[in-house]
Image (cartoon, rainbow, N blue to C red; front, side, top):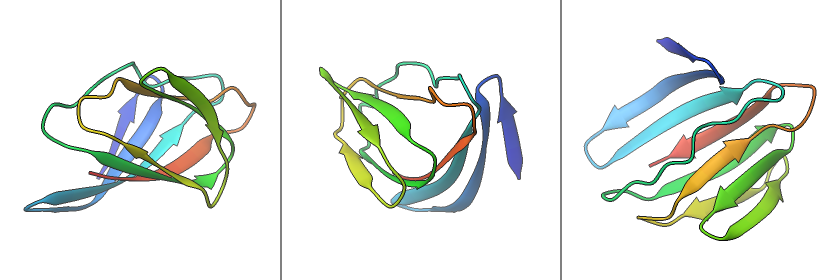
Length: 92
C-alpha cells in the first residue's frame, strides 16, 4: 500500500523478520527529514534521478544504478534538488 508524505511517498514491497524493502519517491525540491536509527542499517539504491545524500558529516550525490550504505546511528537525509521526482529502493 502506498503511503503519502509531504515530501513524496513510499511503498513497502517486503516486510519480513530481519529486513524491510521500500520503494521511495521524493518529489522535486523536497527532502526527507534528518533522521537516525539506533537498531538498523539501511542500503539505498537509486533508480531514477540524482539524490543529494547526507550521511553523518558527508554529503554526496547518488545517481541511478548507484547505491550507498547508511550505518546504524548515522544521521541521514535524502534531498531532491532537481525538477523531477527521484526514486530509490531502501533496504533496512
